[in-house]
Length: 305
Image 1 (spheres, helix red, strand yellow):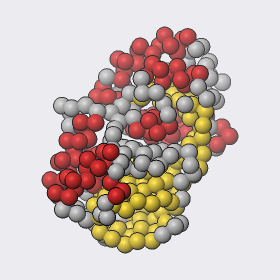
Image 2: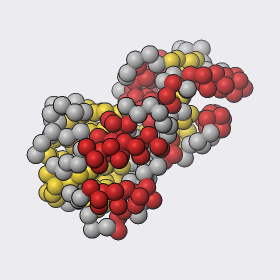
Image 3: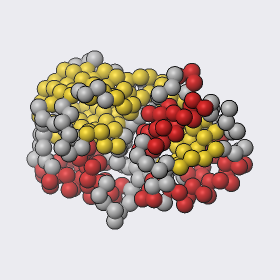
Image 4: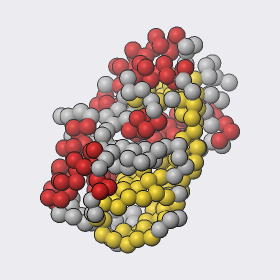
């Protein structure tokens, strides 16, 4: 058994490399509540391995210190162990977006969020199992983006002179200018079917992504279903018109937007697509993914909020 019941996993590169320095300010709070064992990530997917190892070692609580990508990896690590051995999840938001933390009800101040982890109550939240046409599987806690917003995510990684929401806004404008593509998407869910040329399809557990785009205003991470938002083929000018609406969550009133809910979803496209999972690149430029499926798994993760 480990010395402590708590494992803290820190991504030192979160928030453009500032997280490691800021994490040192959390040590006194951790000591106040009995201490914990700390680990830092050193390569992509390392948080996944650390979380899996923590669960197998018998830790009762795993705290992810970082952004949405860190939380995504930690949850994927926790999902590798049976639910009866799965530790509770705590989140200390140190990223650019922190969208899942927002959806789960985590305090956005890192110090208060850490105190919340040690003193708060738990609730079970949903995740979705994503599988592509090559049998690759990931678990998703916040959003899966196909097309436009996935390309925005890829472009945002090259923007280093801005922070937070501004990064994504700049990437949005770049994508409208350079990647205005609308593949034909055949979608089948447990509720409906449709076939249409779409610029974007986002499947949502929480209401927002990109640090402030309210993509699915009616999405809640503990309701047992995912929401989706899709934008049909529109002109660049119309896409510019829709972006402020998405920021406010009012885009559903436009006929070019399609909203819905599902427990199971299958997607097939007429060409390769870009895909992000919770802000992580699942299929980038040059990949050949054309089919994916999602299955919602209600209440799979227990989060301290």
